[in-house]
Length: 223
Image (cartoon, rainbow, N blue to C red; front, side):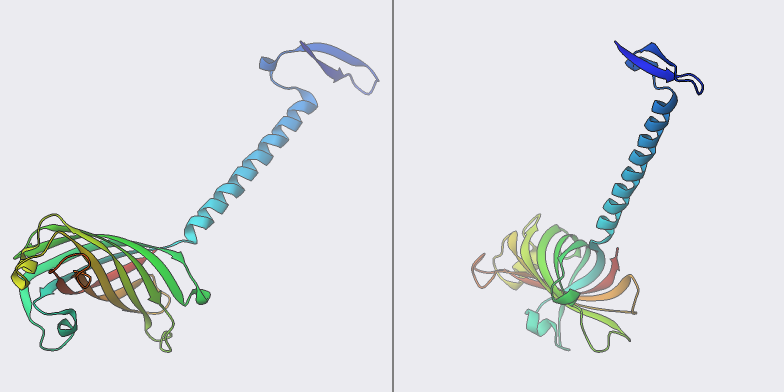
């Protein structure tokens, strides 16, 4: 059993009364308890604010784009004489910036995406890429510009029919890479995206044959 010491008036008189943990606190101890509570709440708010700021410090981007699959190599796909299949793609991609070397002029990103084809092929495709993006261009005060290249694995839920039209054989698992240019107003959280979406045999390292190229455009939202 513990005792609580209570002062009476201005006299130097103290009364010892029994105190149990369930009895709560009294007098000066109650004030001290309230002080500790307020300090604890303040500390919790500070910690929560720090966590929120830490999350805000991370750069995320949601990219939505659509395009059309070409009949050509990736070099020919960038020429004015490009030819297309009757096959289309719609992609949703989420990227996270995990490093910013060179004072942020270069960002390193991790991107995951889900793609759905329409037309001559209708399968779903899952892609993952590690990308580097360069941000510094002379005209950024007029048109905010970035250029990116990403590389990673690609998995199709079925053997792509268009790839079989290009080659007699292909496979579900190939290498994915993309090149991308973004253009947008300065100091905004959105930009226009132009992307070459490519599935590759990786010079025969992954498959003997198999490739596809898609020219696409869309929007990127930063948050």
